[in-house]
Length: 394
Image (cartoon, rainbow, N blue to C red):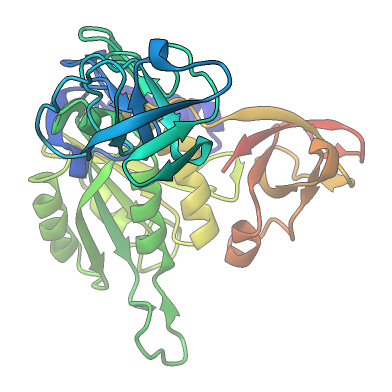
C-alpha cells in the first residue's frame, strides 16, 4: 500500500466493506435523525375534526349584521372530548381554541372583537363563513403523503407522525460499528494524568462521528496491551457484534504497533498513503468483518474517518454525502509535493476560506475551530490568496 493515492485507498476500502442497507420499525422516541425508507401516508385527516382557531364565540355568519350584532350566549365549548349541542340560529356559544365547532356554526369571532355584558355578547363586525375555523383535513387528508422516503427525521417530522396517531416509523437500520483505541499512554477524559499520558479523545471523536454519519457504536474498547493475542481477543469480541471495526493507533513503523502486528498475521494491508494528515493507514478483516485502521494522532484519526469511512456509513444510512463546495482562499497555502493535504479551514465573510493553524496532526484545537477541510490535490505544492479550492464541510 506504500504511496497509494487517497482515491485508490478509498476505492479499496469500498471494495472490502459491505454494509447493511436494511430497514427496521422503531418507536418515535428512537427515531430522531433516522432516515425513512418509504413514503409515510397519513392514516387520518388533520385536523381530525373542525375546531376553533381562537378563543371567542362560535356563530352562524348569517346571524351577523355589518355594523354590529348582539346575541345571547347559550353555552360554552371547551377543548375536551365530547360532541357539543348544535348551535341554534340567533344564538352563540363561548368556544376555546382547539374545541369542536358545533354543528350549525360556520365562523368564529375572536373574543377581542366582542363586548360581553351578562349573558349577551355584542359582535362588532361581520364575520364570513370559515373565518377562524380549522376545517377537518385542511392540513392533510387521509392517504396523502405525510413524509417522503429518504428523509432524515427532525423533531418537526416526529411531531406530525404523532399528530397523525402513529407511534412508530420504518427507518434505515443503523450500521453497527466497533471502535477500538490503542496505546498505553491513553487515559479516560476526567481521570488524573501522569507525565507521558494523554487523554483518549479518539474514542469520543469516533463515537460521535459514527453517530453523526448515521451509524451506531455498539462496541467500544481500549487496548493498552502490546500482546497481539490480547488484541485478537478484543477483535473477535467486536466481530461477533459489529458490521465494521474501526481502530486508532498502532499502525506506524515503531516497535509497539500492535494493530499492525495483528493485521499482518491475517493478510491485512498496513502502510503509508499519499495523504497528510493521515499517512499511515491499515485494512484487514476478522471473521469476515472489515477492519479499518487509522493512525493514532487525533487529527489524523478524525480526518481519516471523514475521508474513508463517513461516506460509506452515510450511504448505508441513506444520508447525502458531506457537502463539497468551491471557495476562495484568503491567504497563500503551501503543500507537500506528492501528498494530498486536507488542511483545516474556516469560512469567513463572502464565503471565502481561511487557514486555521498549521497541518500538524496533533492540533485538535485548530480542528475544533474549523468548519471545512481544504482539499489540496496531490500534485499541488502552492496556492495563492484569491485562488479557488475545494472544501469539505465538517
